[in-house]
Length: 128
Image (tube, rainbow, N blue to C red; front, top):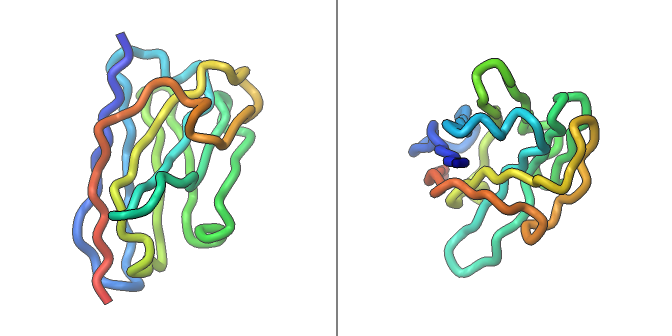
């Protein structure tokens, strides 16, 4: 059974950094693309970043390019999101999710509807 658990969120000042982790106790995460999404109050969930199962293919939303880095350690069934130069507009609940329609080497989708296993989310708050 897939169970994704996010951690690493918190309160940080603008310009600071956080590292989010997404761990899968069910050991399926390592086979597929994993995405990070976020949802701010009153807004729709949006794509942040994704990484293929191999780690060789990555995608980023324009709003986070150059500031966020997604990576993975399949030996630990964990995907990371390193967030630097954080801005108040990055404040949101961050979710990780698995896309089982992907193959090991490529990201197939960045739309949230294509991801079928989701974690419970971790809150990131950036103060100005």
